[in-house]
Length: 296
Ligand code: PRT
Ligand code: ZN
Image (cartoon, rainbow, N blue to C red; front, side):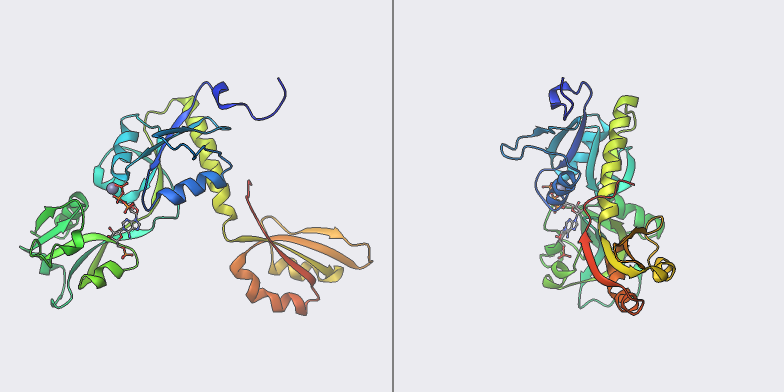
């Protein structure tokens, strides 16, 4: 058989990854898989899709159902908000934080209310879709409040008289403001996480580790640039101290004597502040290139 990508049907063992079908995490989850070089046929999107060149199958679910699906073995791994993992209470292995879908779950009340501290909530009615996280918080703070679980549109509960306050996800804060509410306690901070079931076989565990390593190499390259410049040979030590790179910069001789080319991986935000110093040290022809992946 010629060497190349094995077609997916030749993989005898596969893992199944649950991602959100539609919603705030679905686009970034799909994009992460694409950046990892995993080609998934999106054209005829069904509940299940196979990856062509990696032993991976994708199952598209509602975010609420992902922790349960992973813990019961319907899927082996999943990408889901940490808020859902904690709220659902299943025993899962949280392998890695993915850095997107960041939000917080906060207590908020009508903006006209005077608020002096958490005691305000004693005997109050609080509407939420996250009763487990809220009950734990109130218990820790010895607050005896009434928790009303509602499935959606939590932010309108105070204005229709269903509750005195809410406990809901906040990102920019715009939804609270447009509903006449103010955020008073930030209780839980969340982001998308990569989770797995606890009883993975060693063969599946190996595939999960390979997938995790791809996620990490994509993450490492985010915000990083590949910098190239020509430099007088006698400035190499000073510039290396300024831009140490991963291990150390690569130095290649130029045809012109006394000059070299320096290549180094740097954080993008570090480039502008160091540009003037580089020029003063004699750097010329500075090129900034984008970096796709860092495999280590
Ligand atoms: O259909 P499905 O059940 O899969 O999706 P869903 O509608 O239940 O969830 P979805 O897609 O809204 O959110 C999925 C996950 O994204 C959540 O579980 C969080 O982990 C994460 N996330 C990040 C958010 C937000 N940011 C967010 N801003 N989830 C919800 N919101 C909502 C929030 O409920 C509120 O209505 O956005 C509003 C607040 O946003 P701001 O920017 O106005 O503060
Ligand atoms: Zn949901």
